[in-house]
Length: 483
Image (tube, rainbow, N blue to C red; front, side):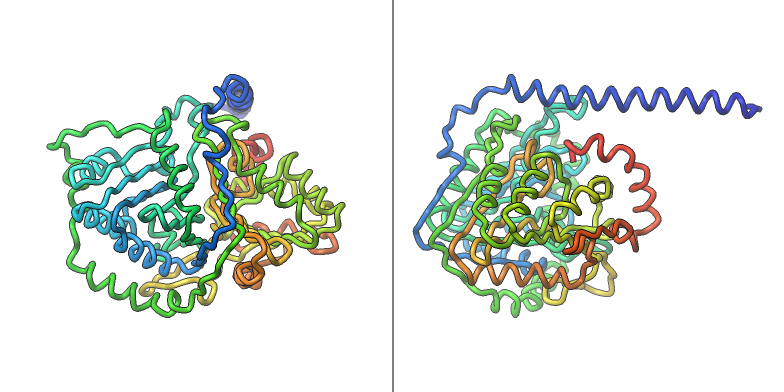
């Protein structure tokens, strides 16, 4: 039996090994990302491929209700006459994704060209080659973005975080929602409050061009073929078949969302900008963060923003200090530990809370509660609600909605997109009111007088959430450039 001295010696050895591994991982990733930035080839396409501005009339609709956003997706898919393009970071294999997939397969049989581009991030990837092959047989093309192996630490960090549904090159639906039950209020235990923006007008052609840019990039690959007799093919074929209860469920969704969709207003934007990143790694290919920074530099009075994560490094802190020095009022809503599945981001936020309290920021943390009019419960399930919207309102007249999180990963690593509508007070008021509905169900983390309430960030979290949080807390600040 080991004595106490021996145990202490083993513990010290393990700590040394663990510490050495952490240092090695940190240096490998940090240096690798810098090298990638230096040697990355300049994208052969010009900025016109990723930035579009239009003064033409565009109709804009915003959807905060998860179930209604599922219904609207099905309606848009069913309306397609020529083409459908979908691009998502996550495409799950569950009820919501199955219903969307079946709608896509139906349109493909009607002669509509359907293409799906899914990021290959292994921690969240579900739409495997068997599903892609099943869809191909039914007339739907599927490609994967950046299939870099997980062990290739540096190149695998670049992901496409874009979310797009494009209908006939005329209508675009984008925002924070991926394809999965938790984005449509259908998960039994944890759902996301999110935001979609539907844009109809000439700028949709530019968005379609950006999809083609990703679809044909060197990082997009066709899935590997699967033996038709493989067991995974049987499961995939079942995914395409309509269940006996589907018709009744779709009727229920239609009925429950009718009032929400009918009451959703349509705005006309005559000053619209679309910005996306290039489909290549490297900071010089990131265009969304500079565009958002430039918009913030034009703010005159106030900024209200919502993001599921709030991880601030040097560049973000400089922006906050600039806003403070110009006496711009800044209000941000983000998740607390109890309302997120990414506790490491809360740990990073806690590390920087003291510095943030000196930036003039007014910060709120969401309490994981359902929001009337924005949340749905199907059946008797009890769900925890977390924020997933990526949006901001400037000076009560400019609205930004897209896929960009307030974190270093969105700024420097991921491919993102954003729509910016200027000079439209009505749209800005609609989005701002939605954000403040959620703020009313939130805790004040940093008050207007600069007082920080660290304990409120973790109050009410489950034992498992706290365990993960404290385990990752020592590393959150060290690896915040990857969060």
